[in-house]
Image (cartoon, rainbow, N blue to C red; front, side):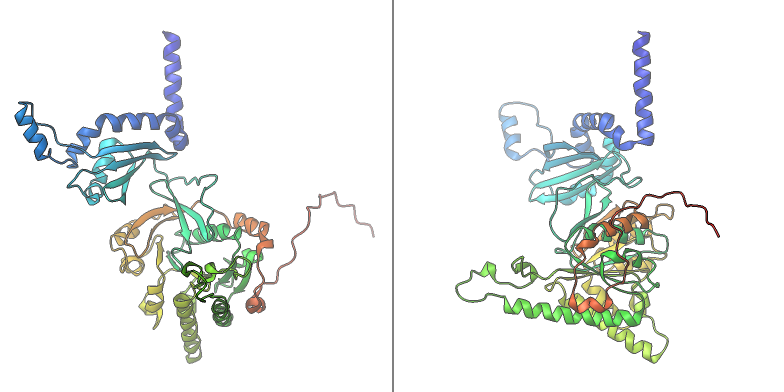
Length: 452
């Protein structure tokens, strides 16, 4: 008996230590079993308490009356599948006639409390089928990205972890242009580093505009095909990108294959419809601080600013088919930056907002696409840098957090994939000059004593 008590105490102590220091391990070892039991045992009563039941159908009531049986109970959504994950549980529910996916979405907070989970979200998979994702612990407190992701589609980069435990991807082919807002020390730069590190391993040209004298992007120069560190150079670089875009469109026109002998599905309308051997390399343009491109103090600077904004708007409107994608970052992005800014913002479908200093900044990101996300963005606490709210034109949004990536780690990744940096003739004048990487490390030896 004593040995049994000692073993039980060791198990309890181990569980408590894991829950404190390694919540993911605790969940996989202990938490997932308890959570599945809680859900299965409490399911009917919780659904009834949360109002997610429907009364029995008329034919069941009539059958009970004819056979003199008790009135059947209300019916709950049927569980199609329960799947444990590394961060929680995934329930797939089949709704009853008369129920709606919004009913489940409105009850997620009550489900979280009733099932004893950390967070609950839901989404509709198809008509009548809803997926409920439950997290067993705070996955955003200590972000741990999966060691490997099964999705290897081009221009799709895992950059952060969502609050439901799934991976957040930046998919440029689905959402060509994006806007990232955030105050100082909000984690915006770390998010950008994760983005560059993810793109570095793909066949893509990176173009950077960093008007903070290049302190953010120039350390990553070995993986960039073009860089600009001041507004004057940025204007020339954007003009070169517009010229490159026009050349790509001429190539697409020459290879459209619109003869009557070619099936409709093979007609080329963008670079992804071209043969792989003829396809131009896609280009991702990263603007570190957009306000530095839009501010002006003199008439000459105002003319430069108008040309810069015009070039950005042209790239945002026309660049997708030519394989040019924009990733614009800033602390604010509103009409006070001058004419053309709101037109540019309307083209930036993907929106990500880190901690902001005021509600108007959150409205700039989500006011026109996901009003519900505005409140979530202004509630991000100061002591949790890296947490952000992401959304798109569909109206959906989620809280995410990118794993902390130091500048040294990002530099090492860019240096590792420096051989993937493509040479684009139109951008050759803006190619950063970097020293060649050493072929091998030279072992250090003791320096001999100097003699006169």
